[in-house]
Each structure stands twice: as C-alpha cells, then as structure tokens.
Image (cartoon, rainbow, N blue to C red; front, side, top):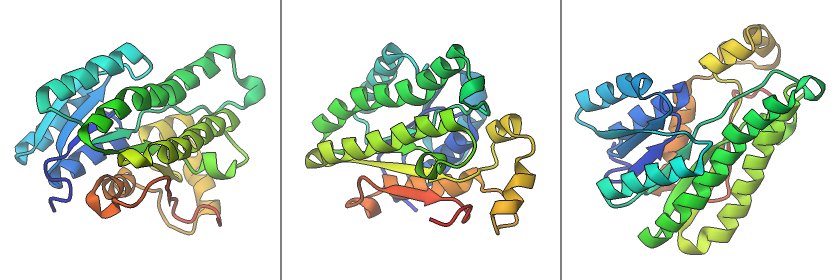
Length: 248
C-alpha cells in the first residue's frame, strides 16, 4: 500500500478495461488519479469507485489524437494539482485486417490513435516532468510489437514503433530523471479483443498453457510497479506480461 502516495498519475483511455483497472489500483496505492477519455460518462463508474474508497480523482475529456487536447488536459492537471508525476498511455485500437485489406482510412485511424497520441503525449508531458525534476512514462505496447506474430501486421507495426520510440526517449531523457518504459501484454481479456477477434479463446488455448486469458488487472499490476519508486532505476525496459504465449 501507498507505493504511489502523493504522485499525480494521468491515465489515458480510462474507460477501457486496462485503464480502469490501473486507475483503481493506483488510487489504492495512494496516487492522485487523473482519468481521461473521450466519453466522460463511461469513466463515471471508475470515479465513483475511487471516491467511495476515499481516493482523490479527477476526469477530463480527452481526444488523444489531438495535440491541442493533450495541451488542455495537461494544463488543467497542472493547474489543479501543481505537477504530473506519471503518465500512462493505454489508449489504442486494434485491427484484424492484414496489409492488403487495410484501407487508407483504416491505417490513418491506427496512426492517429496508436501513434500520434503516443507521440503527442511524450512531446507535451516531458517538459512538465523536466520542470518537476523527473517522472515516469509507461506506454502500453504489445507482444505483437516484439515478435511479429503471423497476424495483425499493421497493428504489430504500430506497436513496434511505440516500443522503439520508448527506448529512444528513455535514453534521451534519463539524465533528467525521466523514466520511460513499455508494457508488452499478450492476449488480455478486454472488449476490444472480444469484438475484433471473436474466436480468440480457441486460438489462445492452442498457444498458451494457462487455462484463461490475461486479465486487465495483470497489466495494471505491472504498470503500478513501473510507476512507483521501487522501479526508480528501471528505464528503457519492456515488461512482457504474456502468460507464456510464445517462447521468448
């Protein structure tokens, strides 16, 4: 408990399964939680749960594909709490389409949500963390971006960019006490997976010895570790949480 006491932690796409699980767990660890997302109504349940347990939480509407939205959200966060210690980028979309089936609009959407949001977040939050004497940035990538499995080429490409840029940023800003790490989940039981890949459970059983899909809380636990002072010397890491989906 209290591993994040007093830290201001901004979590994008807090209405998603992983974002919501991270927000709740961060609050239990003493963080001041800032939830962002396009639909504030969907974040309502997360806010209520945190407030019921005495946590400090705020929510801001946030279009992660817009740099102006990033600027507004971060400005509001600093105005309200004076700083930002941790940024968790969980926003992202998947695509079951392969390269030849991918339209220009499909690819543009993947870039806007998976890549632009990530880049804008880094660009806007790093100067704030430098003024504050440091911080922790955690980017949710994917196992797909590490090993290039046989499916989801466009999605894997986007996640590989996130992983690579996280490494570059970690090296560049380590001297400012800013840590940048990636979480690389395997198959996690989320609505996005169920919608995009309805037969995922059957495929998963063929490649994973575990009897169940990973849970959002499994990823949230990894995020909390990378956010807290226990990981104060950890940067440029790729924390793989995959249930042994594939031998590494």
